Image (cartoon, rainbow, N blue to C red; front, side, top):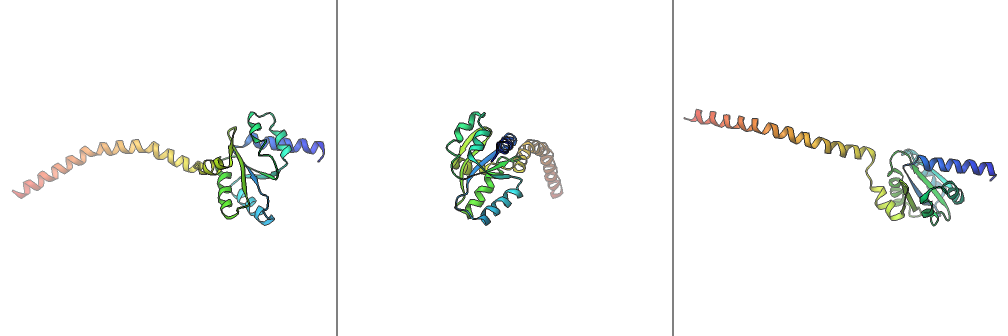
Length: 175
């Protein structure tokens, strides 16, 4: 690779890390081309960018980041990086689902808001985060719970009054 190509590759990698909401580092050793193609298709469906990268280029692209030292042990062997730009948990969820059917795919590490996560944290924490839509619906349910309860409490006296009046009417009719 020529120097200008390396500089462009480093710039592209740095740009992806700057724009990402999370990243997952993968070891795909032993996977067939067909399996990797299926993985790429799943990433593409979810809007996740996946690229096989040279470890040295990633190290150079992230050299100015404080958390890059935590990745030195990760950046060995074959490395693929899945960048999530919209939902932080999207890439981790796809990897977790894909790894159920393909044991050769291994998570090396994850990256979320400048914090390096080990493979267990990626699978158990990052992959279980709610999606944006799920989080919005949970927030909306929480926000609507108080007004709904308030309205319900406002209607109780009127309902009870109607019940008392109906009981009085039945009593008067019974005499």
